Image (cartoon, rainbow over all chains, first blue to last red; front, side, top):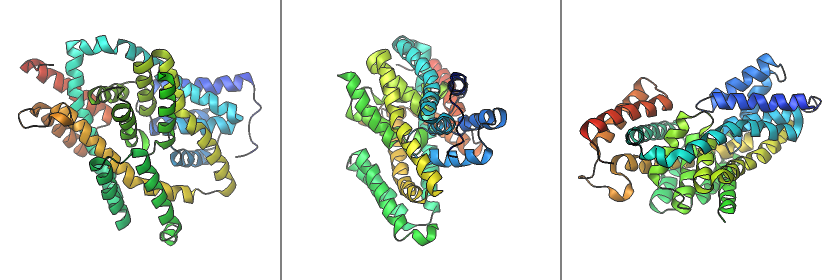
Length: 193
Length: 190
């Protein structure tokens, strides 16, 4: 991956920005949908990166905090044009939602007081609840699927600590990350290799 | 200074957002609603609905909306850019490490350890947002105050999510339409 960067010129940088801008403006749902669009453009059309590289890039993007679609665009920009490329692909990705949400926000108060809108949003609350319950179910099932008691205990302890004892959420994430890291490097080492 | 608060809040959120859009929802809700008090749980639920209906990733949409609601256009720029700033640095560093050592086992171990925490956070978000939908919030839970229509819609959507594998956008849009029709018919007070 190193050293195969393209010569940086205005056209290249503009293509990076524009591609991410268009994909972000036209794609609903984020995540894998955006990634498959990026793959289509940069692998199939422009041939700037190979299919295998995309798999590596997605693995890296998933290992970093933040939004997966944004992380993938960062790594594509970085691969093609270094840090400047990364910054341009990020700006391309975040500008459309920023503009759209700023406009919606400006009209939110009037929008919210409209009776029809208020009724639809009230109905949507029930749908958001359903989506959250459904995701909770599949995540808990995923934790149980590992068949390792430590992860189940961590889930129960984390739930009680956060929901009942109001432990700070950042401390919770740090603690679980550290425990997970220690577990992988000691007891879980053989199983993971 | 609100812009500085948005900056410090969202840079922290960006650095700790693990588990994808829905996985990091509770982290954002915790800081934006519980810690900072920039909006209510009902407004936050609206943002999730609106963000699912508009293009772009959920996390970015939420950062943009919260920023715009609290401090207008400067707010949306500060919140969104602060939210992606940690990722720019971390992704570039990780890319270098990855292409040097060709594996991410250590990191993936840590991430595996985070999965129970993410599941716990999503559970917490599910509890808060369901209470918002069914009782208008955690503080109003009582039998007389129960919104049975909302519970019925949530149950119907859970069946569709499980059996028909409907996506989140369809689910939320569907409940919006069904809910609006029923609430309009019965004259639901808002």
